[in-house]
Image (tube, rainbow, N blue to C red):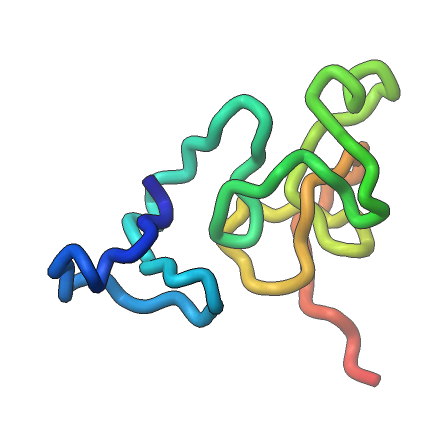
Length: 103
């Protein structure tokens, strides 16, 4: 599994802590296999809900002539191993995510 609850209590001192309040520990990040109702995005398996809190799925995206991808707010795709504001989204965009412009 990507994340394991309470790893430090199990005596797993090799596990690195994750900066969140749910008592999780980092696991093998190369494992990007998620359940059918999730997508590997932003270093974890995310529920299939887009930026607007709408449910998305492979079927919904295909019906719109698009693909289900991990995207940023500009719908640029990510392989899931990038830090930023990413979420599952239907997109036809083919460019990989680039750095946000400076303000």
